[in-house]
Length: 321
Image (tube, rainbow, N blue to C red; front, side):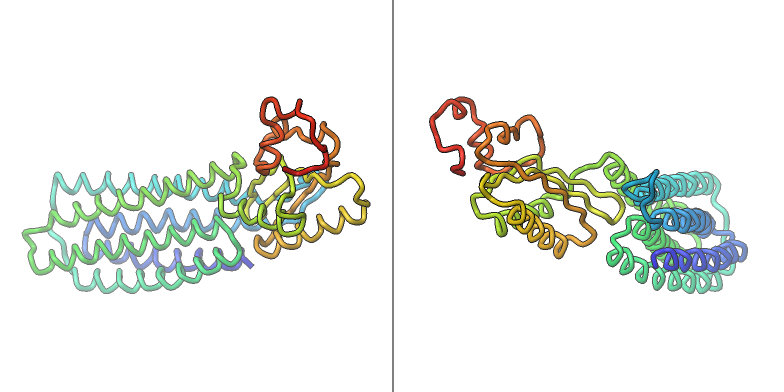
């Protein structure tokens, strides 16, 4: 379960938090302090992730008919914001030390402790990224990217301390590297916030996924099948897809139902956890050709039928152009 994977992140953050503050205590490195502060943010984000995943995987009920999946977007946005807070804290600490450089001590010991912490985060982050892809969870992905950002932060700090260990006069590198790493992880935070906002605003599915939906409409309803109002959105790991399908009016309810079932099954096989709703309309009825009013994506035959002037031409209403 995703919640159990998130709990693994909490344990990793607790362990590495102790290691990194210990490394800062023995060296006095502002880079290591910044690294420890980022891990503190990671711990907070991991706890938020556990809570969000517990809520998101609750089944739909009378009050929340579409489930609780969007709880993941709140967690993703919060994690993105926490990354930005961590980056700002790192820059603040680094600039202060840049103005007043201080000699560092016990660098070899501090580097050794930091490497152990980075390896723990790397292993856990890779496990979480695989789980995020498997469960299609933005919360797990956000938590994993937190840990990966932590790994890169530690790597940069360790490299800087390694140089300072041999060239003590370059102690300024400690602060410079901390600022560079802070700017780098800022990108990850902004990306998470944008994706969370898109999810909360019901942005449509990616173009390649909508193309898959259209492929199955043509495969099971016919290459020239007319449809409109093709709309989609994603809520957590679930996809919601709906559209209007125009079929000959002489088709039986059973025939129309069978076509819709085959379309739905084909979509769900390629896009797991999809909920597809199809509204069938008779193609002979001119009121059915209202794609411009309904909105969403539509077939080329629907587009041509709705072009100005076409509605006045004499044509067989049942003919799909």
